[in-house]
Length: 188
Image 1 (cartoon, rainbow, N blue to C red):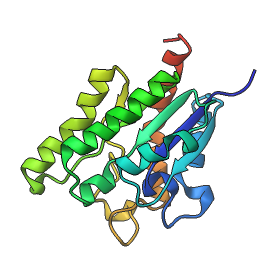
Image 2 (cartoon, rainbow, N blue to C red):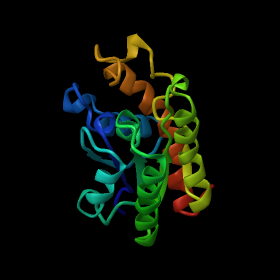
Image 3 (cartoon, rainbow, N blue to C red):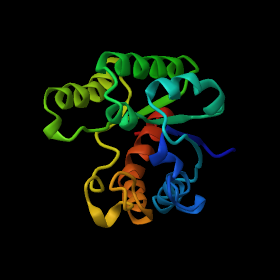
Image 4 (cartoon, helix red, strand yellow):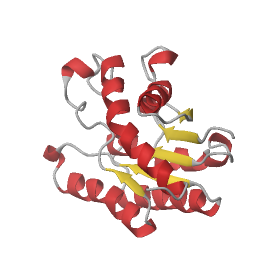
Protein backbone atom coordinates (compact mmCIF):
# COMPACT_ATOMS: atom_id res chain seq x y z
CA UNK A 1 0.00 0.00 0.00
CA UNK A 2 1.38 3.43 -0.91
CA UNK A 3 1.82 6.15 1.65
CA UNK A 4 -0.75 8.94 1.77
CA UNK A 5 0.35 12.14 0.04
CA UNK A 6 -0.02 15.50 1.75
CA UNK A 7 0.64 18.53 -0.45
CA UNK A 8 1.43 21.88 1.13
CA UNK A 9 0.09 24.62 -1.19
CA UNK A 10 1.50 27.89 0.05
CA UNK A 11 3.86 30.82 -0.17
CA UNK A 12 7.36 31.61 1.17
CA UNK A 13 6.51 30.11 4.57
CA UNK A 14 5.85 26.76 2.90
CA UNK A 15 8.71 27.18 0.42
CA UNK A 16 11.30 27.69 3.15
CA UNK A 17 12.37 31.22 2.35
CA UNK A 18 15.90 31.85 3.64
CA UNK A 19 16.37 28.25 4.78
CA UNK A 20 18.14 25.15 3.50
CA UNK A 21 15.77 22.74 1.73
CA UNK A 22 16.00 20.28 4.63
CA UNK A 23 14.80 23.02 7.02
CA UNK A 24 11.70 23.96 5.01
CA UNK A 25 8.20 23.16 6.24
CA UNK A 26 7.44 20.17 3.97
CA UNK A 27 10.29 17.94 5.21
CA UNK A 28 9.90 19.17 8.80
CA UNK A 29 6.15 18.47 8.70
CA UNK A 30 6.85 15.01 7.31
CA UNK A 31 9.27 14.38 10.20
CA UNK A 32 6.76 15.69 12.77
CA UNK A 33 4.08 13.40 11.34
CA UNK A 34 6.47 10.45 11.40
CA UNK A 35 7.14 11.20 15.10
CA UNK A 36 3.36 10.87 15.61
CA UNK A 37 3.39 7.48 13.89
CA UNK A 38 2.05 8.73 10.56
CA UNK A 39 4.00 7.58 7.51
CA UNK A 40 3.20 10.06 4.73
CA UNK A 41 4.87 11.78 1.84
CA UNK A 42 4.70 15.57 2.17
CA UNK A 43 4.99 17.38 -1.16
CA UNK A 44 6.04 21.02 -1.13
CA UNK A 45 4.06 23.33 -3.39
CA UNK A 46 5.06 26.66 -1.88
CA UNK A 47 6.19 29.60 -3.99
CA UNK A 48 7.67 32.71 -2.41
CA UNK A 49 5.59 35.79 -3.05
CA UNK A 50 2.40 33.93 -3.95
CA UNK A 51 -0.93 35.44 -2.99
CA UNK A 52 -4.16 33.42 -3.07
CA UNK A 53 -4.78 34.25 -6.75
CA UNK A 54 -1.31 32.88 -7.63
CA UNK A 55 -1.96 29.63 -5.77
CA UNK A 56 -5.24 29.28 -7.62
CA UNK A 57 -3.57 29.90 -10.98
CA UNK A 58 -1.04 27.13 -10.43
CA UNK A 59 -3.23 24.72 -8.48
CA UNK A 60 -3.59 22.07 -11.19
CA UNK A 61 0.13 21.92 -11.96
CA UNK A 62 1.34 22.27 -8.34
CA UNK A 63 -0.93 19.87 -6.47
CA UNK A 64 -0.47 16.30 -7.73
CA UNK A 65 -3.68 14.41 -8.50
CA UNK A 66 -2.49 11.66 -6.13
CA UNK A 67 -2.77 14.10 -3.19
CA UNK A 68 -4.89 12.71 -0.37
CA UNK A 69 -4.83 15.92 1.68
CA UNK A 70 -3.97 19.43 0.55
CA UNK A 71 -2.88 21.84 3.26
CA UNK A 72 -3.78 25.28 1.90
CA UNK A 73 -1.50 27.85 3.52
CA UNK A 74 -1.95 31.08 1.59
CA UNK A 75 -2.96 34.59 2.56
CA UNK A 76 0.11 36.24 4.09
CA UNK A 77 0.99 38.00 0.84
CA UNK A 78 -2.62 39.08 0.36
CA UNK A 79 -2.30 40.78 3.72
CA UNK A 80 1.02 42.40 2.80
CA UNK A 81 -0.46 43.64 -0.51
CA UNK A 82 -3.76 44.71 1.10
CA UNK A 83 -5.68 42.64 -1.44
CA UNK A 84 -9.41 43.32 -1.09
CA UNK A 85 -10.81 40.72 1.27
CA UNK A 86 -13.66 39.75 -1.09
CA UNK A 87 -11.16 38.96 -3.85
CA UNK A 88 -9.01 36.88 -1.49
CA UNK A 89 -12.07 35.03 -0.22
CA UNK A 90 -13.18 34.27 -3.79
CA UNK A 91 -9.76 32.82 -4.57
CA UNK A 92 -9.75 30.66 -1.44
CA UNK A 93 -13.23 29.41 -2.25
CA UNK A 94 -12.16 28.54 -5.79
CA UNK A 95 -9.13 26.61 -4.49
CA UNK A 96 -11.23 24.67 -1.98
CA UNK A 97 -13.99 23.89 -4.51
CA UNK A 98 -11.44 22.70 -7.08
CA UNK A 99 -9.73 20.40 -4.58
CA UNK A 100 -13.00 18.98 -3.26
CA UNK A 101 -14.13 18.24 -6.82
CA UNK A 102 -11.11 15.95 -7.40
CA UNK A 103 -11.89 14.74 -4.58
CA UNK A 104 -9.01 15.79 -2.32
CA UNK A 105 -9.49 16.50 1.38
CA UNK A 106 -8.55 20.06 2.44
CA UNK A 107 -6.97 21.47 5.58
CA UNK A 108 -7.25 25.25 5.39
CA UNK A 109 -4.71 27.19 7.45
CA UNK A 110 -5.71 30.60 8.71
CA UNK A 111 -3.59 33.72 8.71
CA UNK A 112 -4.04 36.67 11.04
CA UNK A 113 -3.49 40.35 10.49
CA UNK A 114 -1.89 42.47 13.20
CA UNK A 115 -4.71 44.05 15.22
CA UNK A 116 -3.36 47.56 14.71
CA UNK A 117 -4.49 47.40 11.07
CA UNK A 118 -8.05 47.94 12.30
CA UNK A 119 -11.19 46.99 10.38
CA UNK A 120 -9.24 45.33 7.56
CA UNK A 121 -7.65 42.98 10.12
CA UNK A 122 -11.00 41.85 11.52
CA UNK A 123 -12.45 41.27 8.06
CA UNK A 124 -9.29 39.52 6.83
CA UNK A 125 -9.08 37.21 9.86
CA UNK A 126 -12.72 36.16 9.51
CA UNK A 127 -12.32 34.90 5.93
CA UNK A 128 -10.45 31.70 6.82
CA UNK A 129 -12.81 30.18 9.42
CA UNK A 130 -15.81 31.26 7.33
CA UNK A 131 -14.53 29.52 4.18
CA UNK A 132 -13.70 26.40 6.20
CA UNK A 133 -17.19 26.35 7.70
CA UNK A 134 -19.04 26.99 4.42
CA UNK A 135 -17.18 24.17 2.64
CA UNK A 136 -16.95 21.89 5.69
CA UNK A 137 -13.18 21.44 5.46
CA UNK A 138 -10.64 20.95 8.21
CA UNK A 139 -9.28 24.16 9.68
CA UNK A 140 -6.10 25.18 11.49
CA UNK A 141 -6.70 28.68 12.88
CA UNK A 142 -3.26 30.28 12.51
CA UNK A 143 -0.30 28.85 10.59
CA UNK A 144 2.18 31.06 12.49
CA UNK A 145 0.77 30.27 15.94
CA UNK A 146 3.54 30.62 18.51
CA UNK A 147 5.97 32.00 15.91
CA UNK A 148 4.59 35.32 14.64
CA UNK A 149 6.31 38.38 16.08
CA UNK A 150 8.76 36.25 18.11
CA UNK A 151 12.26 37.48 17.16
CA UNK A 152 13.83 34.22 18.35
CA UNK A 153 11.77 32.22 15.84
CA UNK A 154 12.02 34.49 12.81
CA UNK A 155 14.66 35.55 10.33
CA UNK A 156 16.06 39.07 10.65
CA UNK A 157 13.29 40.32 8.32
CA UNK A 158 10.87 39.55 11.21
CA UNK A 159 8.34 38.05 8.78
CA UNK A 160 9.70 34.64 7.80
CA UNK A 161 10.23 31.81 10.29
CA UNK A 162 13.78 30.62 10.88
CA UNK A 163 14.58 26.90 11.21
CA UNK A 164 13.45 26.84 14.85
CA UNK A 165 10.23 28.63 13.92
CA UNK A 166 9.52 26.09 11.19
CA UNK A 167 9.97 23.31 13.76
CA UNK A 168 7.34 24.96 15.98
CA UNK A 169 4.94 25.26 13.03
CA UNK A 170 5.51 21.64 12.00
CA UNK A 171 4.94 20.29 15.54
CA UNK A 172 1.75 22.31 16.00
CA UNK A 173 0.36 21.57 12.54
CA UNK A 174 1.14 17.84 12.50
CA UNK A 175 -1.69 16.69 14.83
CA UNK A 176 -4.21 18.57 12.68
CA UNK A 177 -2.84 16.96 9.52
CA UNK A 178 -3.01 13.54 11.20
CA UNK A 179 -6.67 14.13 12.17
CA UNK A 180 -7.60 15.32 8.68
CA UNK A 181 -5.94 12.26 7.13
CA UNK A 182 -7.79 9.94 9.50
CA UNK A 183 -11.10 11.56 8.56
CA UNK A 184 -10.25 11.21 4.87
CA UNK A 185 -9.66 7.50 5.44
CA UNK A 186 -12.90 7.09 7.42
CA UNK A 187 -11.10 6.76 10.77
CA UNK A 188 -11.64 8.95 13.82
